[in-house]
Every structure is written in C-alpha cells, then in structure tokens.
Length: 436
Ligand SMILES: NC(=O)C1=CN([C@@H]2O[C@H](COP(=O)(O)OP(=O)(O)OC[C@H]3O[C@@H](n4cnc5c(N)ncnc54)[C@H](O)[C@@H]3O)[C@@H](O)[C@H]2O)C=CC1
Ligand SMILES: N[C@@H](CC=O)C(=O)O
Ligand code: NA
Image (cartoon, rainbow, N blue to C red):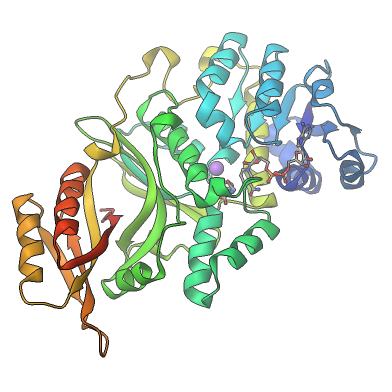
C-alpha cells in the first residue's frame, strides 16, 4: 500500500484538529482510502507550539515555502487563512504539481477562479469541503449528490459564530461582546472576527455555493453583505411574537432575471427545522427541481468537525490521484468550458418579503397613511402588530410583514413613510423568507 505524503501549512485550531484526527483514525482512514495518508512536514510561524503538538512524528519548519517545494510531498493542506501568504503558497504548491486541500473560504471566494484555473492547467486538484459549513459535506452534496438537479435556491446558516451569538443572547440574555469572546475562545471565530459578525465569512461561503450550484464564476464582490451588528433585541422579540426567528442567512437563488447572492439577518417561520438550529451549528437548505428540499445539518466550525472535512478531501484525492484529470469532479461542479455568465442581481432587484418596524405617534389616521403609501407602491400586507403605547407614552411601535415585492419598491415606500410627520425616526427593515 502506497503512503500519500502530506505537508501541512498552519497548525492552529483546524491544523491541530486535522493532525489529531488523522493520527487517531489512521487505520480506518487507510482502509477507506486504499493508501496510507501521513503528515510528513508542518510549517507554522510558532515552531515551538507546533513541535509540542506533533512530537517527533514529523518535521516542523517556520517557512511554508519548504513544504510546497518539498519533492516528497503529494498534497499540501493550507490552514493558515487569509489571502496573503496563503494565496502565494497555494499557487506555488499547484505550480509544483501538488494537490491542495484548503479550508480557506476567504481565499477561494476572492481568488478561486485564478486558483482553480491554475490547478486545471497543471492537472491537480484543489479540494475545499472544509471551506463551507465546516464538517457538513455540503460541497460533496452540491457537486455530486445533487448533480441531476437544476438547483433553484440555497439558504443556509453558514456562520457558527453569529448563530452562537444570536442563540446565547436570546436564551441566556448575555451581551454581544461577552458571547463573541466565548466564540473566539472556542475556536469558532475568524482571525478577524469582524468577518463573522459583519456577514463577510457567510458571504464567502454563499459565493462558493452559488458558483457550484449555478455553474457561475466565484464573484464575492457582487454579493450583498449585512451582518448582525445592527440587529436590535426589540426586533428579535417582535419577530418571535409574530411566529418567526431571526437568523443570519446566506442565500443564493436563481430567478428569471439573474442570481440573488445575499447575506443578511432574515426572519424565517419558527416552525421550519432550520429556524431551530442553535449555537454554533450550521444548516443548509437546498431546493432542487427533482429532489425538492434537502437539509444538511451539523457542526460548521471548531477543530475536529472542520478536520473531518479536510480529511475527507485528503481521502478523495488519495483515491483519485491516479485518475485521468478529465474524469475528476470539476472544481466548480460544472465543466470549466460550460460555465454560465448569468448576472448576479444588485440588491435593489431582489424580490422577497419584509418586516417593517416604525415608531409612530399614537394618533388617529397614522395607520391609514402608512397603509395607503404601501398600497400605492403595490406592496400588500401579510400581517401586522400594533403595540399599545406604554403607560404615559404617546408613541408606539407598528410592525408590518409584507408579501413579496422588489427591494427598490420597499425602499421607495420607506422614504415616503419616514417623511410622514407622525412617524418618528427611521423605519427598520429586515428581509423575510418563507423557505418553502
Ligand atoms: N476555526 C474554524 O472553526 C474554521 C476555520 N476555517 C478556516 O481554516 C483556516 C484556519 O483557521 P484556524 O485554524 O481557525 O486558524 P488559526 O489562527 O487557529 O491557525 C492558523 C495557524 O497558521 C499559522 N500561521 C500564520 N501565518 C503563517 C505563515 N506565514 N506560515 C506558517 N504558518 C502560519 C498560525 O501560527 C496558526 O497556528 C482559515 O482559513 C479559516 O477560515 C474553516 C472552517 C472552520
Ligand atoms: N468563523 C467561522 C468558522 C467556520 O467556517 C464560523 O464561525 O462559522
Ligand atoms: Na463542508
């Protein structure tokens, strides 16, 4: 039995998880792969820590260039993160004829086309199961299991950190910063946690899923990205009263006009399975024309769940390394010469339903004014909640849920509503998806 030699770039949270799981399950993994798989060299800036983790099992260096240029190494696993040195080392590994496994969604969502093209030219594989929804085999499902389908839409809770923050704030009444620190301590958050809380990490993952679902290039720059930092506790409460939960969703949807690619807090009916995904768990709902809805659930972050996906990629490569490159699963699921140029729609062209909260003077006629503005904009109301003013107050909240309409219609109506003298301050708008 041949042993496939692996070089590891970065032995932090995911790197250490990969090393440990590979060692622990070595025999089982070899029986599946048909080859031994062994990490023979590790590069990490923190050499002392790395040596402590790997013991005498393999060589430890500080310079990743020594890994990507080592002629002994068949597969390079990139677990450093970011688009700087990681990109350089991945491209060098490919140029040296090595297969690459990476968990780096930031790198692939921004430079994926260049990297996949380089790999294609060189006849090597770049595998990235860990880059989307950690341990959930969603790349495998989209690229292979669902290949018969025309994918209609994907909606996912694909950032563990933000889902953990929303759950802990709601269930334990903890404040945002405390929960974020805990997510960092548990190894869920990105090196720069603004990527998590501002929706960027989820958008990287949604970008990759959109590419493999619709056969389009990776276009992170066209994604609409909103995080959870502007979300207010009052809206989470009102949403619950109306039978909804608020989740940070990554959405990729095919429409007759183009593709919607967006990440934002979203109201979803509380009765949906995905609305009950809590903590750092991830879930991805995929609607295919033949299969209907399928739901994938599991740990989207953390050392060993992510290592599970990294090692699955190592086994895939071990099995396919000797196959004719033309017969491998294409990097982006569709053959490189069959990619579509379907446009990604600007957010103004997106069609969805909306939650609107406005603070109003408790006067006769206010509601009529607001509803007539919505009616003039052909926006119909699905549900409404009007709060009684608190004792001694003369102002109150009105919450409206709309039927589907285009974002630009809603924006125009909000401007008119905000201009009413009886409406105080800004209207809060949160998108709503029924996911059915
Ligand atoms: N932590 C998680 O739950 C998940 C992380 N990912 C991705 O996996 C990758 C790694 O993430 P983590 O393990 O969490 O990060 P980490 O920060 O724990 O580990 C990164 C490691 O790379 C090392 N490093 C930094 N610069 C280096 C350089 N120039 N040369 C050699 N080593 C260098 C650091 O010393 C550190 O040990 C990132 O792309 C991340 O987005 C993906 C899914 C889940
Ligand atoms: N920071 C990410 C880690 C996995 O991709 C998250 O919180 O989901
Ligand atoms: Na995955």
